[in-house]
Image 1 (tube, one colour):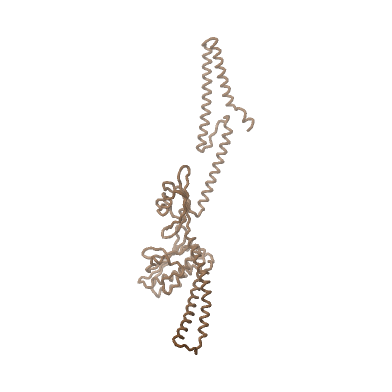
Image 2: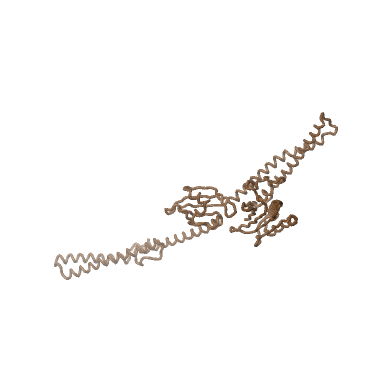
Length: 438
C-alpha cells in the first residue's frame, strides 16, 4: 500500500472540518449562553450548528447509498458501477472489479470448454431433476436414444431404473430404437446441487462390444476343438485305412459274416473320420476368418454384382426381385467379404421362397437418423420361427437337413469385424435380415 493510500483523502478532510466546526459552534454557544443568556447571536449560532449537523448527516447518507448501490450491482454481476473519484474505497473497489471480471472470464471459458467436451463425447449424458424433468443433455443423447422428451417418464425402459435410484447405480438395459435392438450400459449418480436433488445419467451402447466378445469366444472355442479333434482324427483315419489293406483275401473266419462285419467297421471308421475332417474344415473357416482389407467401395455395385449371380436361377424359378435405393453409399469395407455375406443371405432367401406361390425377394438400401447405412433383405417366405431366432446366429446351429450351420454365424462375424452388425428383425407379416454398416 502506497503512502498516498494511507493519507486521508479530500472527502475525509471535509467531514473532519464539518465536525470541528460543529463542535466549535457548540462550545461557543455554550459559553455565550452561560454569559449573556439567549441572544440573537446564540440563535444564529444554533441555526448554523443545525445546518452543519444536517450537512454531515446528508453527506454520510449519500456515501452509504453510493456504497450500497455499488455493492448491489456487484452482487448482481454488474461491475460497471464505481464510487466517486475521491471515495476512500475507490482503490479497493477497482481491485475487486478486476478480480470479479477475471473470475467471470475464467468461468465462461471453463463453461465453454465443458460444453465443447460434452458435445464431442460419444457417451450420452443428461441431468434429471427430482420431478423427472430432463434439465440438460448433450448431443450424443439424441444420437443414441433419439429425440428425448421433456420428462424421463416418457421413456419407460429408462424411467423405471432412474426414478427408482436413490443412490449411485450401474446397470444394463435392453433398448429398442425403432426396429433396431441395442443394449445400454447406464450409470446413475445422485447429487445435490444448490439444494436440488439431481441425477446425472451417462449411457453408452455396449451391444456391438458384446457381440464382438461373443464372436471372439466362439473363435477361441473353435480353435481349441479343431486342435483336439484333429489330433485324434488323423491317426484314426490312418489306422483304419492301414487295417483295411492288411486284411488278406485268404483270411478265413469261422463265420464268413464276421469278415464282412470287420470290413464294414473299418470302412465306417474311415468314412466317419473323413466327415469329421470336413467338419473341422468348417471349424477352421470360423476360427481363421482373416481381418477385412478395408478400402472405399460402392455398396450399390456390390449388391448389383451379387444379384447377377442369382438372376438366372430366379428367372427359372419365377422369383421376382427388387432392389430399392435412392443413392449410393461409399463405405470402407472388404468387398469380397461383404459380397460373401450377401450371397449367404440371398441363398437363404431363395430357399425360403422356393415352396411359396408368391415368390418375391426385395432389397432396400437406406440411411437412418444416426448416419448408419442399412441393407434390408426381405422375402415372401414363412419367416423364421420364434424359437429359432434366438439360436440362428450360434455357430453350427441349423434347421436344414443338409445345412452346416455356418453361413449366418460367419456372416455376422464378418459384419462385426467391419464395425457393423447382422440382425433379424421380427415383424409382421414376415421378419427380415438387416445388414447395418456404421
